[in-house]
View (tube, rainbow, N blue to C red):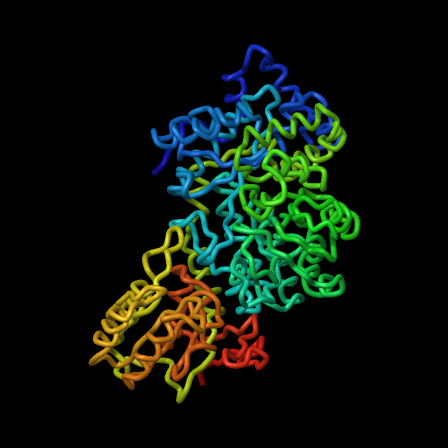
Length: 609
């Protein structure tokens, strides 16, 4: 049991008074709070009028911080805070820059367990409310779920990712997944999630979106995006549709370069725009920009994040969106290639953005915006417009009334049996059976009882139980099979392939995990060598579902759309026949020999009799 000595309400009312500065007394703090009580537009504007220029600029920034504690980070994190921000703790970073938001990362030691996360949230909220203008923080995380973008792991509920939800073809399941995720985040004091992904993945070679997208059909993606918006926001967490104006048809990763999308305006309206229109119609709280060029929408070829034509001209005016717009992370190369880091935040604000997410150098970015306002490049009216949108969202989320998490809320909400059961049920509906020659699946006890589980083991997502081969073997073992796990990696060597063939001797069947198989991949050799043994071979594509196009002779093929525990455990249940496969491909699979030929269409999926 984790205990805090102060209740949520006591924390809210005592922290600011206890840390009042000489410049602003407790009475002034109460006046600030009174200005926004009831959530009136007039009250929010009055609050802005009393904020200093530095405090208003600070509201625009969402920064990372180092450490698991707001006041007592470990020595390494303290040193990193000094290196990056000139102060030792998260609280001091908030105070120095008057931040409007913080984003959590596992690699920054912000995320250990739900109680610690809630404690960190409460600590930095206390620091925000101790400022001369006590405005609560909007604490955020990038928690898309699935295998690729998950920051908070077990014991929080792990849910299937976007493409798995696309395969389930159930808006109600997508909404339930978002409601569960949102409720658990709110219980930990996190009130903004950078999800759902609204990109339509029409490019099988997309290196950065892929299974983070619900699929390739714009209307289906739009339905699921809207469902997730309603799920998150119904749970009291701001959803963020990303990445506007669309990142689904790129072959360059915007983390490392500047992608270019050559859709015509008609193609953009038909392919990329529908999910964002649906998100806006569903009342989306926030939209994230993409660091991509779309010459049809802006001939200047500026990244969309910095494009007035795209952000103000299309998103604000054409689509009628007046909520918060946030940048994608400003440390990504796609937004840094054309302009220096000191110009990027200024240009983003001039384009129509409100939140400036994760600048690589907070001091440089903060001072650049401050200087641009002082010099008149950005008017105070333009600055206040963004600050007002951010404060409106904070008021809508109830942060002015009570921004704190409670131990009881964590215990009653995070990782409950009901949430875990729902996650498993949703995952069961997503697993897709692509091929099943001669009714190989399901494997029955007594027929295929002794299994080799081998293949690719990419880096495990945050909070998972281990490598995919080990997890699949363990789960199949719990279902009654005798299993041996042998990892060969995503690029198996000849020696490792030989080991797998030797390990297959005497087995009844082989399960192979595959990961982004290409024409040149040595995973193809692994599969071919194991098929040549004459044993029944089942492949499980644990990332993109396109692998089967490169794998000849396989008896059965599944797609799990991820390698998180919940996705792989569902695949094991399908292999064992405990549940029937019900998933349907949300993207097409083209023939590897002739990409103009369709191997499996959208909607393909087999089941058992």
